[in-house]
Length: 168
Image 1 (spheres, rainbow, N blue to C red):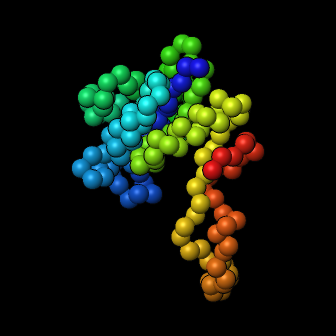
Image 2: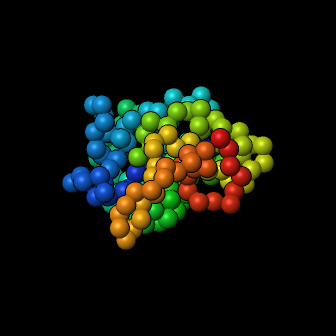
């Protein structure tokens, strides 16, 4: 199995309230993109790495990642789907397994990558990692804005909607 990781870093950062793309915002002295790439590169498994940068931010991305070894940087698209497609288009020939990762999830432990790859190796066609919600959630009546009961957190996980096999 030849593995690649595509880091999608093409988000605008508008919800973050930033005047620059989210992946270029600093966290603890380094950008989210640098933090993310460093975390992924701590993974013990062999893989190739593709970073998808926002249009016009390819050169800053390459400069930030120059000391991180062999990283391919490509231009993202208008939508997340377009950006993922651009990353997939830059994969090395012979890549058999691809992990798509969001640069905004810069602090994801490499154990998550291990669990995802292990599930794929075991036959899953696709995997969406999930983590338990630990914050308190309450219901709100939209018409009155009155708060209701707390939500049972044992029923909630953070992930993208999917019908693929889940791991925890």
